[in-house]
Length: 218
Length: 233
Image (cartoon, rainbow over all chains, first blue to last red; front, top):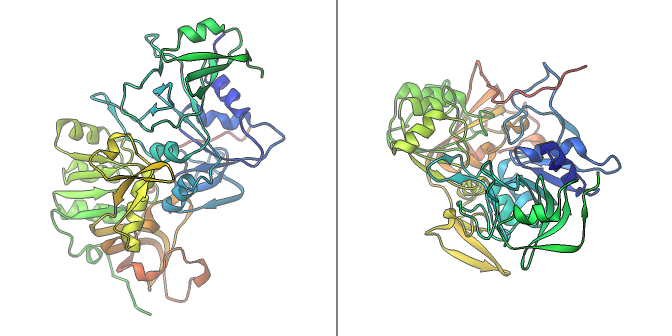
């Protein structure tokens, strides 16, 4: 059975390592905080200027001056810090943030990503996404494998305006965990109950299957 | 001590005219210069170029200037929360330049720090890099981005003293410190204005040298865009 959004977040959380500073994008990535492995310490960075982001505040404790990049009220944990936007992007551009997890509308077999604009339909802006994808060494994309019409979003080349070129390394969808290699997508793991054939069918870009392909374990 | 205080918002915005370029701090509605925006609405200055990370919501923040069609051009990184903005943009009434958030911060800081421009990897290979000089450093491509040139900068800080020294609170800090001293005239509004010597010099986030005018605002609304909470049970 294909994963739901929480399942995607849960699989991504397995990629977290002790000591990581992590930037989470809006949407599915936000759910990753619910599945952090118990034996590791990680800190979450929000590009509007906080490191050490905690859970939502208790009702009545919300503070308009303490929000995340999704403009949601948040709390901070022990060891947290606040800083200005320039410092925040120094952390990002300067590769001090270890892992970036963000959503995408399309990804290409060469690691291009599109997630900020649908010409004539939706123009919201790139926010911090272009800075994040241009600089991060370790980017995991959380996305649906196909759109509502069943068309693949893992493509030979992106049809939408790009956010970044050749930057995506790993992708987790409702169907699979994939990597980008020299010849395109590499299928590493299938979602529970999903076959290798199903993943290949749902992928428009060039895809190869890893020798040790297996089912995700949770 | 050089005293930077002005008695009220009207004095603080003296000299603001039609066709000017303004820098405005804030992320979403967090840390926006509420009082300066209200005064810009009252002054009815038109044809403005506004540089700010977001464009407010329909009935607050920069959305108030959009309602009166006072903005000719908006430079921002994310504008997803404002229906009137989208309408004016799609109809062509409003010119919009969307730029990466880190680039927006650094173009402000470059203006503050006297750099004419800088190279950044953000936006290379995308629409953002079109028409801009690109250059390779250590095998990676970068885009040349230029410092902002603005007439007024409107800043919101938490506490300030008469000398213009500033302290910010929480994530209301955001672009505010980077925009201090990035325009010809920097105007700061604070929730608490104290006498010089009341703030610990070790704790100052922005020194007063970057500030021309400071005033105390009252009755801050501080609207929350996404009120997210968890229950105690």
